[in-house]
Image 1 (spheres, one colour):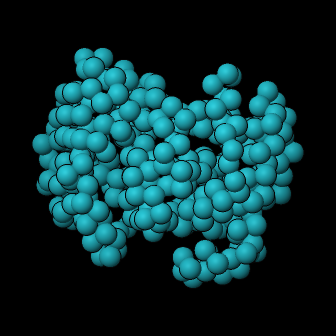
Image 2: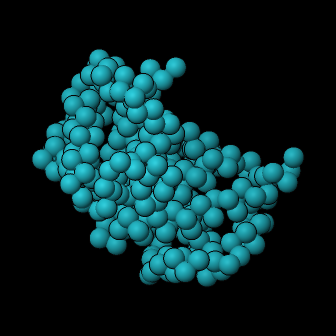
Length: 141
Length: 141
């Protein structure tokens, strides 16, 4: 359950990350492919070498979607509607992978924010990403 | 296994304290195992608790031993696994949570060193540790 303060914290952080969306997104993806090689199976159609144009643009898409959701977390189901449909009926990525990506996103944020990535920020971020992943998987069945 | 040599990079006990604090704050239900350490009405009491910090150091010392005996991580953790299972009765899922927090803590304190490749190496090593810590649980059945 996210408190009001946590929602504000999350909203502020993602707003500040929007200008570097492609860097953060590409790094999180690279960390995921490197640590959890099974996740690469969903990307055989893309060039997933570090910081390739595909990685940068795909990373940017993901981060901007997360940032958009963070603007009003209570409306996640509405905001993510189209992405829910995409993931459930077209992409059909096994939802376990959302957890793996979230973990790598947390590591990326920790590296990016250093000491500012306090336990409180970590907890809030983990809760938000879990909620995001859960909503994303809602239409699967 | 050669990849594991990367883990032997110099590392200090600071990660132990940071990681244990993260686990107790990010996953508050883990506090159930630390009842004898005192009351945790809020995050500051966790951060200031000497017993928690001491436990962080204990965990890191055992990891240090595992790093020095990478060909026999199972052996290093056999008695600890039995102790956590039979005496402390800790859900082995907690070991995975702590492993994740260790990696995030390293990222936050040593961002330039935690490249995707190094993260993957740490993940491999800690997965072996987590498996070893869970090894004596199945023997109970």
